[in-house]
Amino acid sequence: MSTDYRFCPQCATPLGWVEAMEDGGPTLRLRCGACNFTHWNNPTPVLAAVVQCADRDGQLLLARNAAWSGKMYALITGFMEAGESPEAGIAREVLEETNLVAERVELIGVWDFQRMNQVIIAYHVVARGEIRLSPELVDYRLFAPGEVMCWPSGTGHALAEWLRRQGVEPRYFEWPAKP
Image 1 (cartoon, rainbow, N blue to C red):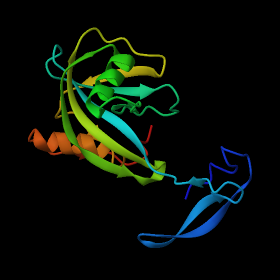
Image 2 (cartoon, rainbow, N blue to C red):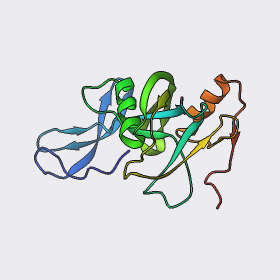
Image 3 (cartoon, rainbow, N blue to C red):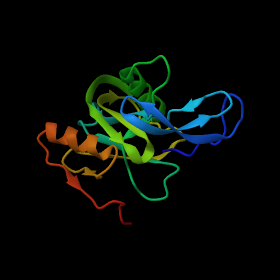
């Protein structure tokens, strides 16, 4: 259960844990005693892209986030915005973060990422253009599909699944990556 919410966003009363009867039986929820607001703590949909560069021999683009301390490279990810489909959202994220234009967007699958209270919706995105990173990213690398290393959590599952579909057995490194 998330403890991010401590006060009601409607009336500023402190929230408290209350047992509520729901379809699956008794469940603890953060509730406001004054106005009955309930913090449901639903997972956030996160979009992820295995970006394959059509104009770079089909290499995969992995990027390093500016906020990360290590040298980890990962998939392009972002949050879906209200009013857009997941497919449009991941095409937008790829364009915003890499300047690449999506030519094809195909669903790989959906994974839970409970540690972050997220649901990952992952796509294979074939894109082209001149790579220019957004300020969110500090570096990128291009990999042939057989050279890329997967990680055993989060978006690493999507990358591994995409590789299997290409006939490439995924290789994994230890998490977290050692320098």
